Image 1 (cartoon, rainbow, N blue to C red):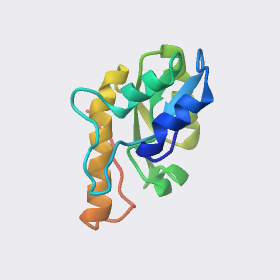
Image 2 (cartoon, helix red, strand yellow; image 1 turned 30 degrees about the vertical axis):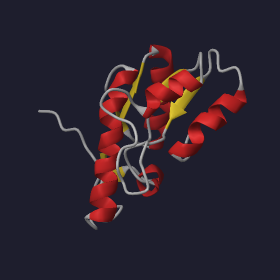
Image 3 (tube, helix red, strand yellow; image 1 turned 135 degrees about the vertical axis):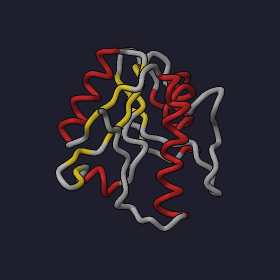
Image 4 (cartoon, rainbow, N blue to C red; image 1 turned 45 degrees about the vertical axis):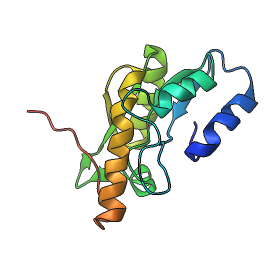
Length: 145
């Protein structure tokens, strides 16, 4: 699980060496100190991480909410949504199981390139929680009819 500051990700991943066949859960968000995306639209942090951790099965997850929702992802009896994406079905199944064990409702959003949408979603959560002062007790929920 990679949960470092964006600036530290590349050197950390490259220092580890052989990633072949390992599952790497990417929780990072490429956010600058002034709360802007450092990477986006034509690539994502997750895609760059996959390049730095050659051979790893990268799954983007656990990046679009705060620590308090990690500790308790249930609001009024409803599990909040954890969006994930990645290119390896087995790796996504394992990450789905972990997230469900924590109490999340998991939505597989697709291939790793979908991280281009999930990382800005995280920035929206940060903006609403911190900048707009809604507080950390907010979460996203995908509703179906």
